[in-house]
Length: 487
Ligand SMILES: NC(=O)c1ccc[n+]([C@@H]2O[C@H](COP(=O)([O-])OP(=O)(O)OC[C@H]3O[C@@H](n4cnc5c(N)ncnc54)[C@H](O)[C@@H]3O)[C@@H](O)[C@H]2O)c1
Image (cartoon, rainbow, N blue to C red; front, side, top):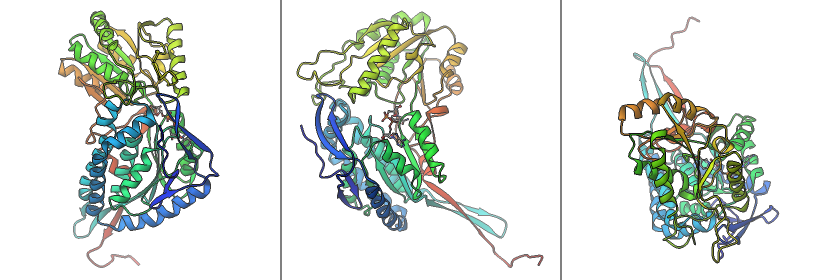
């Protein structure tokens, strides 16, 4: 299987190559085959991208917002019309089941383009009456922004950053994860087709050093990262060299709380969705499932019954539920966490191994895994695993579970299941998390702000909140009479 792009980077309005850059092997996680080879951006490529962004951004920012919005909505239509092609590419790059990518990946990107393409014309400054004199504010773009992506939702991440950035009149230089370089290039082609000027959305490939070079570049006004907490720290440090703004969407170890009065089948559905979808490679996953003690046995019995029915297999087969993990290194990390869970005395209820996959044995497979009797101090309850490993913990009462849920450096997401709606709101208000769900899990509609607190991040993506992070306010005082000067 080959998915070789025309060239590694997308600069100005077309593909560009510089073979002096380090080679990036793009591997199909289901088979271990190399599907493409691209080169990491050299300093010359980065400078070309910055120069083209300067030109393109000036033109783009001068267009009325309603026209920029029209281009973004056209891009949304093109993404939708190529959904299958883009989904297949995303499946090749990530290994995620086509059953998922067909409904979730390009489509959520299209929703971002459509949403920001629609709301931007109404995103204006304000007029402030000062009693005769007045002031007004302008919402202006920041200039050139850099987007740096993780590998779990490549085209969605590119769109979640590009849509609000471009809507506000910025240019975006996007660096995909080195593990998933392909779909952002297709998005760049689509923007050009939709009428977005050259240089406004560009793609440079690279490892962390390219992300670091972009972050430290003085022309970059803002860096938006989706990635891990350690990378977030480095980006904040790099951006501080010239006080660039940051949006950081980082990792998590989110609590999902099941109270005794919950609809148990729903709660199990939420816990499975929030631990196994995308083979567990979702930042908001509710990987600490707290179940109230008197419903624990019922919960676990049905959870295992339902989990063993999950179908692993060829990701391109639309009947397949779960594909492999993205890379051999990430799979090894997951295996190590499973071993640590066993060594710490958690009870392995199902999974925990590398399955036999006929014809796909060189892929990076792992079974959906459930541990019960997990306690707060165990490594599997404290660290982000980023694989299909669910930890189930018991609790007795509300105060206790809130304190334990909050006892973590992370604060990305949280969820709870209960029929007592008063309790639902009371507990949600007490949880340290940026994105929460009541009686469901992991739904992230574009209209809802998305992001974390504590070490899970800074800033918000999606919703009108994202527009605040990609524009700056200019205040203008307007006098209506002579200057009242004592001199
Ligand atoms: N909050 C969210 O929205 C969200 C969504 C998806 C994934 N994530 C998180 O992402 C992580 C998994 O993704 P990952 O392994 O690709 O993360 P990562 O931090 O290793 O890499 C993310 C990106 O940062 C780049 N990078 C690495 N070092 C850099 C540096 N010094 N300067 C600039 N860029 C650098 C990488 O090349 C990659 O493109 C998990 O922690 C997960 O929770 C968060």
